[in-house]
Image (cartoon, rainbow, N blue to C red):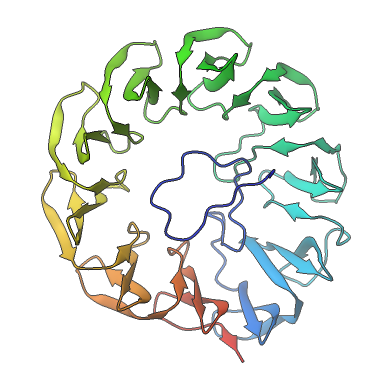
Length: 366
């Protein structure tokens, strides 16, 4: 399989081969006058006041990024603008949002890159790519897979890091995790091996620290290769200065010096999103502040992190949204729900997907 897509309500995703949130808004979406609107089984677009600006004709909407959306028509994907103009022929099996004028597209089973004029300036030839619309910088290198091996190219399709690795992750903070001869380490953009290839797994850097594992134990290395020892049974990325780690089956949080800031006591713990993290204590889900104090606690069946002051929670078998004050702000009536991004959330009701705003306004009609 060449594309791994995040699914709703997954507690942790360690790797994604192509960073495209299919059927989700991207973080670049900040245009509330270009909202996907469903009429029965067809999709178009409307304003926040539900004025239709692009008529219903599309089978699916993959994403909206500013004034351009990825849409499916007659079984193939392409792009449509807020004015209704279709940028490219509908010929792709997958595609990503445009970032700095660049998008990744899949045609005939291979990935390449196009510009906003629809020109394939890197023709589809790669079996997999890792293109993250949220952090892409045109000066950075792009991980690609060709004939079973990974390396990095630039936007001129020049092979900068040889395609010889078993796996790589994108460059973060100047280094990339790479796997060679079944061992993980870190390389720079000149293919110099900066941190030795001695790990069973190595993750991307976050706040100057990367999680690594060997022989079933987890720890961290900084950008100089200095380590927090491999003494944990599980580890998450550092965010807001703290990382969730496990001793046995209990989770807590450490700082970058390896000192405990929130003791091990939780059966699940996720990275901090801002100053709030979601943890589970027995059957209770708790939203923690970074000082370890509880902000909200409740017997929710499932829950997501807060985004834009709202968190998706499951209660009585259905999903709704919780406010930062601990109140149900949008009723639990949905079969599934994604977190809010730039004012909109994608939800599923009666077997069909649609979008809502923070007031619970539904942008669809049957």
